[in-house]
Image 1 (cartoon, rainbow, N blue to C red):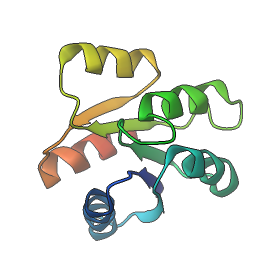
Image 2 (cartoon, one colour):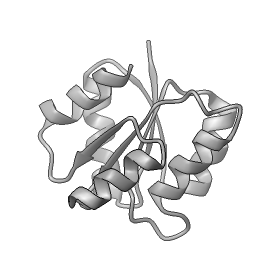
Image 3 (spheres, rainbow, N blue to C red):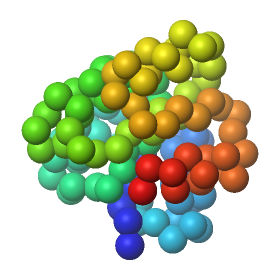
Image 4 (cartoon, one colour):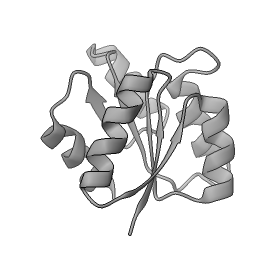
Length: 119
């Protein structure tokens, strides 16, 4: 069973993504901020990280960049899931190392399709 680390500072969004993943048969670890997620990514070795972009302590773009620069987590796929839906945002996400980019609001199907595409 694959393990997914979900990072979002919105409790409602975090709960929804975790629900979709659990119903699809994934083990889920959650974090409400990027700094917490960095620690959990190293300590718990998930198969995938899904992150929001706009968060108070560190952005999802910064989290993605940090994960990809760290030897212990650089192979970890990252899906960015955010309201930032401009082409420039998507391009920037890819430049930070994101493997997939999903914009909110998303459908359950679109969300899970992005997850499956990188696992």
